[in-house]
Image (cartoon, rainbow, N blue to C red):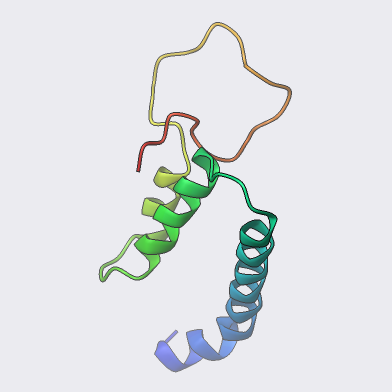
Length: 89
């Protein structure tokens, strides 16, 4: 597909998701408190979206993933948290 076809097909869906992200950030910021590692990772991923270049999806995924390769002896919780707890970005 060319630029126009891709934009025609996916723009409204991406627009909707972007508005969802903005609403999420509004709720978080209104709630007060300190940002934890999840929001720090999330904001780093958002910055990545504005940088020129390709492989944005891969870069965002890596910012939200645990980069370690050694297995852990036991999971720390019952579910995934969506970001790496030791993110320092």
